[in-house]
Length: 185
Image 1 (cartoon, rainbow, N blue to C red):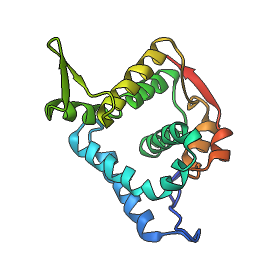
Image 2 (image 1 turned 30 degrees about the vertical axis):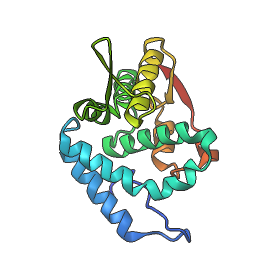
Image 3 (image 1 turned 180 degrees about the vertical axis):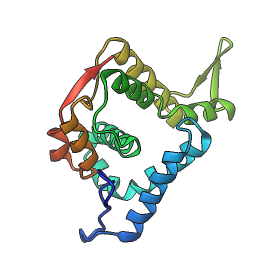
């Protein structure tokens, strides 16, 4: 039979399904499933997946007001595709949310290694305006929210929400606004 909750197919400009993109992404998601989530290979595969959705996202990010929420929803959507769980425990949602706040860690680490740093009184810091610097600021902010129990994420402890996130038409703001969120920390 058909596997349950498959990734929704990608649509082209005309709204027609793009079978090659869908097939490629399904294959990548499967491959990703066999990789250790923390491995470099997984991170690479993840980046490729993200790149594939850039097209869809281009539409989404025009609406800058919702850019952060759209990017967040897309991240959680991908997690639901990879995990293939009908529902998450609160503990698992917390873990997932922590993972979410660490999504740019590779870029941050690479920036430090490639010496894009300012040194103030012996302390290495990333240039706050650099992309990695912005990621680092964001990470600190999100970690702070988690510590205060105030990070707002899709409520994946509710099976209806898991389904809604998984089936969300990437980049659709109206649909996203109807997805129930919860505070974690």
